Image: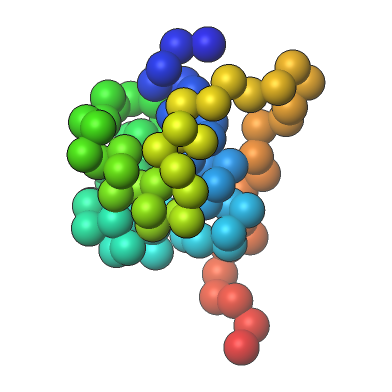
Length: 86
């Protein structure tokens, strides 16, 4: 798997596991939400500095964004849309 796809896979996996929307992640990492979307679609190649910001925003190490998914891992499901109950 190419690096951009690994980053896309892992970014979405980490974001969803922490129940963060793309918008919340974008705010926490100080990037545009459309850029987060393009990263998760493997349409952009982020800098190392941005990878550090994203890793920090999801509470992970930068190496977690580059990890090879295990054989048989399923693509992370999207979060449910709409507001979360309070």
